[in-house]
Amino acid sequence: MNQFREGIAPHGGVLVNRIATSEQQQIFLDKADFLPRISLDKRATSDLVMIAIGGFSPLTGFMGKADYDPVVADMRLADGLPWAVPVTLSVSGEVAESLEIGGLVRLDDPTGRFIGVLELTEKYAYDKVQEAVNVYRTDEDKHPGVKVVYDQGPINLAGPVWLLQRDPHPLFPTYQIDPAESRALFSQKGWKTIVGFQTRNPIHRAHEYIQKCALETVDGLFLHPLVGATKSDDIPADVRMRCYEIMMERYFPSDRVILAINPSAMRYAGPREAIFHALIRKNYGCTHFIVGRDHAGVGDYYGTYDAQYIFDEFEPDELGITPMKFEHAFYCTRTGTMATTKTSPSSTEERIHLSGTKVREMLRRGELPPPEFSRPEVAAELARAMQVPQAV
Image: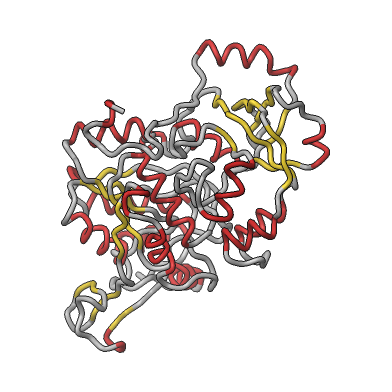
């Protein structure tokens, strides 16, 4: 615990590290051809990485039934620690039957590359509908998170995992800052209060507004866009990162902002995922976390501010990270600034609201987002990426 004396402790008190040492790696490689193997999908691959680097602390592996059941039912691990989203590895009954408890299982990424090992401690069945209803608040398979649950195998495998080695990210190696490193950076900068920001969308003026409002009250801002698996119609990660680079170059104070990637996958679990995202940023060393409108939402499955209300279900010291709750920001034509209903005297007609979904629709129609929604340089980058013809 002493190593965290100057900063916020990770969730559960210990920053997990499940990256194999060179000696362990050689042992696993020597056994590779003799181990039963499982091919991980993109989400499970991201989960393996997040467990190994400590992003999912205190998890040291995929959840057993003793943790899974209370997480699904009550957002608690077996020891009572808050945790909102199950992290599991699901397989078919046939695959599960072929694996022996107490044995090692080789984990391959979607390309077939050997990337990790599972120390199998348990195999258990679970109720897919119950997980869907409790975690995602719906049993409809139109919901992308629910569809993943319905499509995966009926048996969960549990046990500690090892990541063979931590490779540089293929697209964003310079922005790969893992929890131990982000904590060191915050300490080097002398930041005692750090606010984290989660997004799967390109940055727009409403994002910028709430980020800078938060930055007024803390020492530093940790911009942490998610680059793991997302829906097929979401803006690609490389495009989103270029938009953030533009903002970093022109519109943010470089000495008070760190841009880094979050390698985890989206669940689209709305309120529960807001808690999940907050705890991840706590593990990265953040003391505060921005929660805006419809955090991690999709479709009409969640109320506008349900992701804020859910924080009230926990005692403040239980989560160990402070949510910073913001209303839906808009451009106010009366004051000529970004604002919310808390700061603007304008009428509804004087407010320009645009969502990420509406912007994607505009780009597909060949229209550029207006400057009231997006910085011109960001709009131009989005247009270029979407191959939208720009006006001369």
